[in-house]
Length: 183
Image (cartoon, rainbow, N blue to C red; front, top):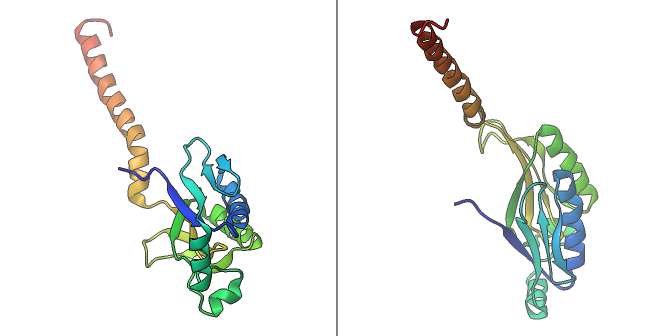
């Protein structure tokens, strides 16, 4: 079964910043806000899809513990100083290489901490083109364009099958018409 949605935790202190960050970086991918309750949760949905990405706020006690344990990021300096971040990894699909590159620029301008410039990642798969940033809480956010030959073949299969079926059906129809004296 496919995944229906993913939810990342925020804190009461970071919820507004996380909401603004994700609204900015998901907009170029066609996402809009689906539903929200101020400082509690917000759901995002892609064009022509259901809400598949949510942010929800934790209680103050959990937020204080995250702060004490060094899990909240405020700048790239936090990464350099060894703060842990939450290290959840979320990847969103892009429509092409240019969209990955455009998204990366927007994400960094929105305050994302660079964590992997746009480029091919052959260690994952041939043709896997992605970019990464850390969000305000240290989560690793990826946008990827991956269109391998086998996926292209699967996408083309209905068209190919329709063409082959049409040719075969046409051949038999002409044969039947000739035998019936109609052609």
